[in-house]
Amino acid sequence: MAVTLNLRQAIVQKVTNKSDEDIVGMIEGSIDFDERALPGLGVLFEMIWKESDDDMRQQLVDTLQHKLHEGQGPQ
Image (cartoon, rainbow, N blue to C red):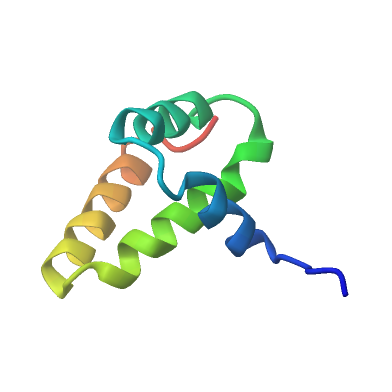
């Protein structure tokens, strides 16, 4: 029986057991480059969001709002 992974599971497996430097490199290598990396960043953001308290979530939203109102969203 073949095992079918969904996208979230595949991304989590890709980053599991990676060093901090590897994860930072993956994130920085994905920003402003190939849009195929965006789902991976979304999964990582989802993981952060789920583990964040209300204060951290508000800080993330504030940061996004600030960038959006500055017109610094994705080009």
